[in-house]
Length: 295
Image (tube, rainbow, N blue to C red; front, side):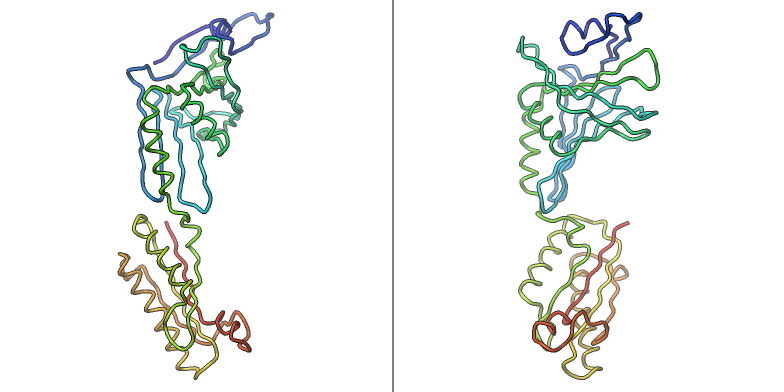
């Protein structure tokens, strides 16, 4: 819904200020979903990504997103149908509901607007917006219109229908994997001496990769390189390094990757990462290195 309001109208609401000496008051173009239009949608819900989205008619959408990672994360994106044409700042204000008269508006943050990019807010501000919505407030973005020198833009999120989808979003966030693609893209697996049996720690690591692959179909290529320590003959060790790498390859094939996306190499005793004088050093050399890539 688009409304044309004078600045004095917003002044009466106590949310904006203008110099008394101004000759002409800019018009406000206000975008928000009406009560009957307000929709919140859990647009993505997997162990890799959770996304909560709210459409702002004729303006764009407000999107909250959290992804699989070692740490709790959240970001906010204000998607705009008309992207900024220059650099500016948008005031982010939490407006109280009409049924709470006398409650002041809250200044949340200043959001940087970059030319031809959507607006974004980091974790702390994004969580604040969710908390304000949970309490019935309307997070509002106020900025000068880069396409009209006479207008200001006010875009608001409507908290109607928010609670149920917010609960589902938080349940999704609680089920995100505690690691993401960047955490497994480069992995070193270690082996027990003399064979192709992984250490317990590496078995757990491979199980994590298997769990991740259940949900990410975008793995483009996997490079597997096998190495050994210097115990045994050089030819035997080279064959052992290939055997280890091939066994890991079979794991990826079983996980659903096509064979042409998996490359195997065995280097035997070459390219040591440590001397071979102690058991610990030899353990470091008994390894398979995985490198996963995405388009």
